[in-house]
Image 1 (cartoon, rainbow over the protein chains, first blue to last red):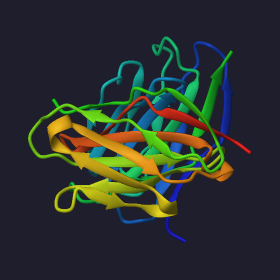
Image 2: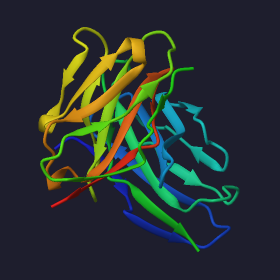
Image 3: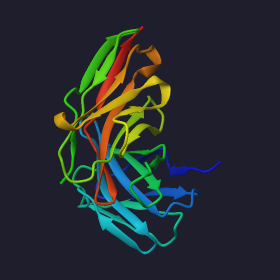
Image 4: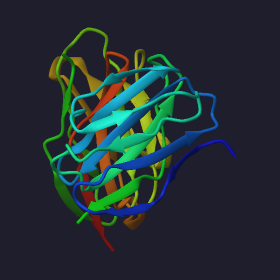
Length: 113
Length: 111
């Protein structure tokens, strides 16, 4: 079945450590996105990419980094510079253009202790 | 820049009650609007979308939304809710090649 796979589902890290969240899709979608979801704040865009080897900052990119070396993969690194990294992270993909919604992954819940 | 706002953060209803969740958008040219739903423990999924044409849009699971240009609104409705409609609902709009989400409305249906 086609879809988006995010791994792991739950992740615990010590403060000051970088951590990378995986996102893989087999939908042949060109565009991929990372959102952060916090209670009462909805989904806020971290980074997005519409083509391989290119990506743009979203509204809350500080403290995060991404890469897009393959069409299928869009990993997100939460760096030690992110002041409040504990959150639920959602990856999505879409066909580029306005007529399509997103397909979402099941998310990764990151807890930094 | 176009954005959306949801005024109800938490709504509690009894089964069989009618539902209307508010969403207002700020005008920014072409209007593209969505409603997404996130059931407990599940993926976000698209309920319905509006790009043009008939302002009354029908979605999955008996939901509908009406685009009212004069009121800058795109409210989500369902005539009779079920316990299984308990979820978080997000209004969203398309802006600069990406979807911008509202803050969400948490809907709790009492059995």
